[in-house]
Image (cartoon, rainbow, N blue to C red; front, side, top):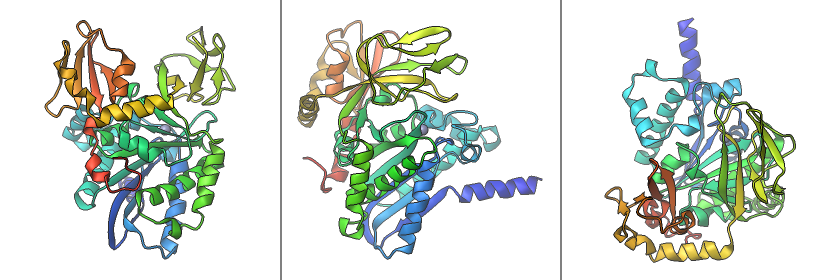
Amino acid sequence: MDEIQAKATERLKTERIIGHLSGKEMGPTLVFFGGIHGNEPSGVEALEEVFRQLKSGEEHIKGSVFGIKGNLPALVEKKRFLDHDLNRIWTHSGIDEIEQRSEPERSVEEKELSEIHQLISDIFATHAPPYYFIDFHTTSSPTLPFITINDALINREFARLFPVPIILGIEEYLEGPLLNYINEKGYVSLGFESGQHFTEEAVTNTISFIWLAMIYCGVLTKEQVPDYKNYHEELKLAAKGNNIFYEIIHRHRITSSDNFEMLPGFRSFEKLQKGITMANHNGEQITAYKDTIVFMPLYQAQGEEGFFLIRKIPGWVLSFSAFLRRIKFDSFLALLPGVSWSNGTRDKLMVNLKVAMFFSKPFFHLLGYRNRMVDETHLILNNRERAAKNEMYKDSFWYKK
Ligand SMILES: [Zn+2]
């Protein structure tokens, strides 16, 4: 029995890599993840399909491409996760803690994290920059395909090449997603939510996204992908021409012991009128507190977010914030009372809210800071802009100086 089990584990391990190709010519390293959530296999299926085509073709790629499977045991069981959400445990302290424990002491997802973490470290050690990371997901409700990013300019510029809506600021609400961990290292990283779980559309949207991503980061040229225009057109059509930037303004938080039920029929990006009943939460009716747009309503048992609300970011705000960041307008912030750098590298600000009452959240957002409450009076603000390794991408065609 043990031997069979060991063999099964071994097989699962070897299946971690969906595909890996390296060209003779130097170039970027592009890493795709699929199935970090086990009930979201569309990314895995799409990657398998594209790697099949890449291997049978004669294309000479520049640099390297990886397709990596996320939560292997949860993918087998078609569940979001088995012990903990693999996309909520990538904090530095969490990773250290997991690495310190011996293998038998680790939970299912901790073992998965440990393997993927090792794999990422190996890729950094053996493959050349610039690095691009893309994580594929799907949602429990119907949705337009969309991108989520941490708000650094390199992420914005790369993300806006794809004809889909882009959501900023989800990082303020989620603790420990895989991409957060990579983004803190300063690399371009995008989450792509391709549609509803287990739908064919979610797979085809992901396939289009993979080909476009390979072209945009320079692994392949447009000439090498004859269907390039079709992929772009298909994705644009699936997103109904929406390529607006949005930001999250509210999260409806739930816990696993709560009784939460979203009323049927809500779709991501749907406009809601103030007062409309959206959900039942522990016997209480939840209504929209203003005219708004719903995002990722939850129609599955597992998950910590009942729904989000979002709003459009005006174009002038995007340009103005890009300007402020390029001139490093935030340099003077730490001179103000109640504000200090919380580490030596100047990518984290500590704000004492009792003293620094003169700032509002949108002000910090403009400058690239996203906040996280540490206690009732202190905020830690992470600056994605200061952490971003802009130098690494400066020769890319999409990079704005
Ligand atoms: Zn997911």
